[in-house]
Image 1 (cartoon, one colour):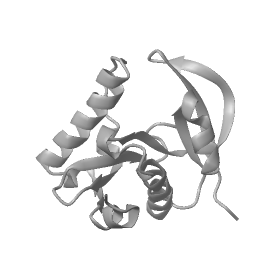
Image 2 (image 1 turned 90 degrees about the vertical axis):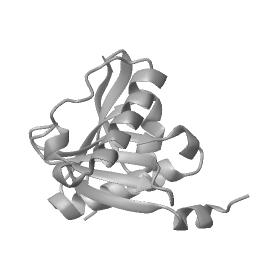
Image 3 (image 1 turned 45 degrees about the horizontal axis):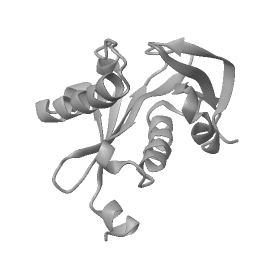
Image 4 (image 1 turned 30 degrees about the horizontal axis):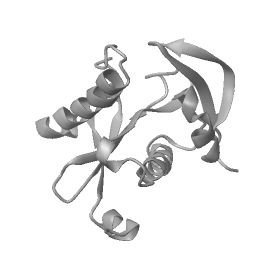
Length: 161
């Protein structure tokens, strides 16, 4: 059995703009997003929403280059007029229940603040993950709502002062 520390040592984190992504990297990202959000969650929607080009892409790959986890880091104005945002947060099925989702969000928060400065981060969270995001410091704003057939809630994370 592989220890958590050993598996972390074999992981590599990449942060790239859209134009820096290689064709195989972009394909792996789109494939994972479609696999989870469209096929697994049975949620047909247009994933190619023209926000990828303005965003940074945080990827975790294993030693073979297989994409394990991904998040899109959006500048203010891309998803929300006045807020930076983290979206398309996803772990591959083989990486679930390993703690990688928490690490992905922690790295996303650190990275987005490095890229865009310390301002509040707004996310559109699937409602069943509210407790997870609250454990990272996010606070729900507004009521739950249906988006593409899945219950969501908007949440904010303010930088620590």
